[in-house]
Image 1 (cartoon, rainbow, N blue to C red):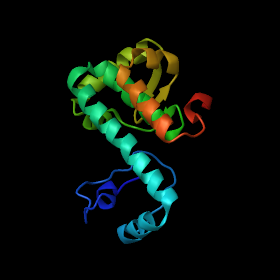
Image 2 (cartoon, rainbow, N blue to C red):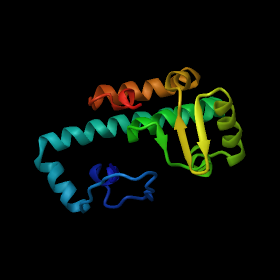
Image 3 (cartoon, rainbow, N blue to C red):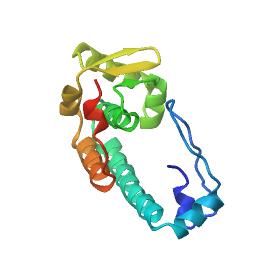
Image 4 (spheres, helix red, strand yellow):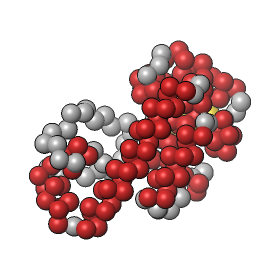
Length: 165
């Protein structure tokens, strides 16, 4: 969900949104979203829970990017991304991951190479496949578990990532 600033009282969204993977999306004007937010207890509760989970992720990511090694950050990012798309097949470039994590592409290439050598992922140009999710979780920092638990607690749903082959 984008547009959180509009729901929090801002009239504009000062960010740019970039789609990272194929899928389905719904679009509505900010005015309609604000109207429905005011009318629907369900939508208001859902959006507030999502905002809480998102703020947890943003804060934890900032701390993670400052204090944890790049290889742990990469594991965290791959796991969160797999959870969001409900697939272990990710269409993503190392450059995009580097941009998102705020590091040089060469650092991602080296970290991904180590995960490949350990049999945790397979990677080719524009594609990463998680082969050993449990192994990746073991190498990720505690930030992944904290963010995942908070999303699962606030926004319960089928545990899709665990059922993905």
